Image 1: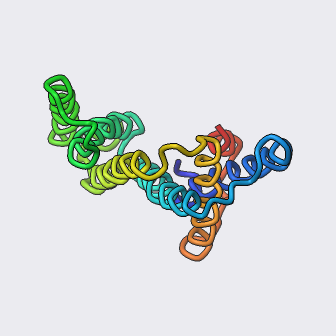
Image 2: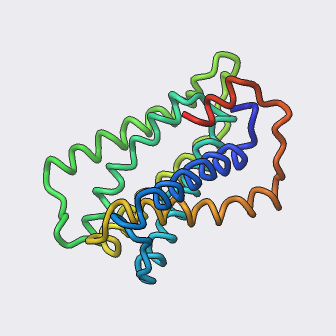
Image 3: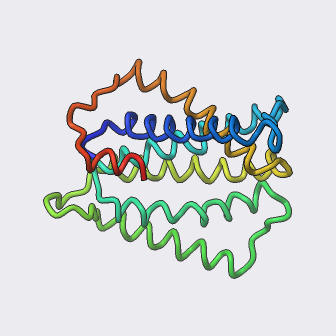
Length: 199
């Protein structure tokens, strides 16, 4: 990750995904899958894309400057637990029960223990930077809120259309943000970095 600024990494990944998505529509969409024109779908999928994909992905990649991918991955596993908790309040059909409460408690306990220990997962860093944890937790909150949002406002639409609009709108949003805030500096990127970008 040291080869890319976090915003460059996320922006370029979205660019690749966005181009592939447009190509799929151009190749097979003319007959089998017409371009979605529903304004409500575009609005909700765009919001979902920016707040549910761009923001969490950028924050998670940014957090890797302060802690290992292993630690970040463990903390991100709190997303389902927080989603279950939020669903109890915002989705009437998803109320909590004893099993869900136990799962939520276990997930949050694990993340709390890891945070209180100040674990970074990095050999040469013994003291965690609180910013790394803060970035992950903001990403977790954003992702969980957007899952609830999608359940309320995007359910019933074709998954392919939702995902495609999510990717395309996220790409259109993040590229200008990337260019005008951090620019595009790839002089440190080697073959390994390009492979990481593409997989």
